[in-house]
Image (cartoon, rainbow, N blue to C red; front, side, top):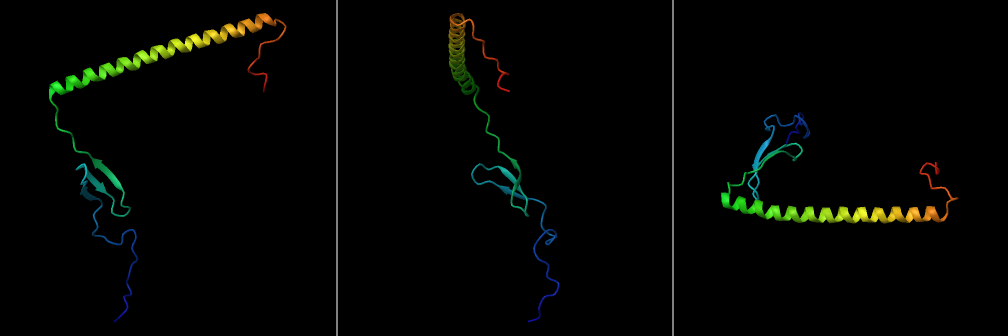
Length: 113
């Protein structure tokens, strides 16, 4: 057998008939994928859209989300109230310490530089 002298190793431009991108359908979610044949990476994914839902289902979903949002807002308000109470207590404690020892200086944030 005669050795092949015009052999080109695989690489860029090796197979001129190779398409720029391969069109593949995902078996799980049925998304249309474009895959780069050289790297094997997905360059584009076109997800399949969900079918339109019933209007009543959407209204129920909005109502359920409204309840969740109200709960989150109430927790946020309670957290803010607690935070302001904590800051008030810290301020009162610092004021008491300052009144107890009027000769000491208050710490300055730039003194440690």
